Image 1 (cartoon, rainbow, N blue to C red):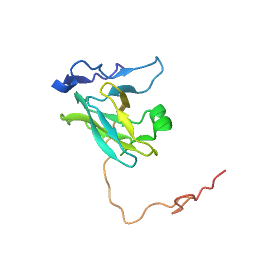
Image 2: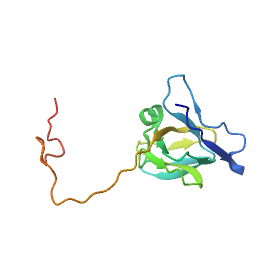
Image 3: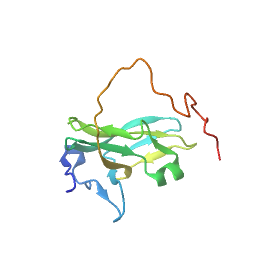
Length: 148
């Protein structure tokens, strides 16, 4: 199976920035950079511009995920994670970042702020039924399977 191709168009404020790229041979996600400078106060959130538009192939989605180093070191989280970029979206790719840390975090233009994972999408048919078949778990929800 051949790899899906992401077609990327740069916006004027994305000029000079690197395209999303895998940083290692085994990386699942491509790092994407900020196209603007801003400071996120503790508890603040912002849709950070990347200066890119992406055409995701039909049958795939582009998942936007946090970078673990930024999450651990600075408390930066990608909200709505993983965010989904649908194959029919043609607007600017923006990353919703939140500062969950105790100190302000400076986002600099060119800083790698998130990772992008290309994933296949399976579209399900919906069928309404009067009742669902029983299982051993039943309606047991949050924490019902234990901790150990």
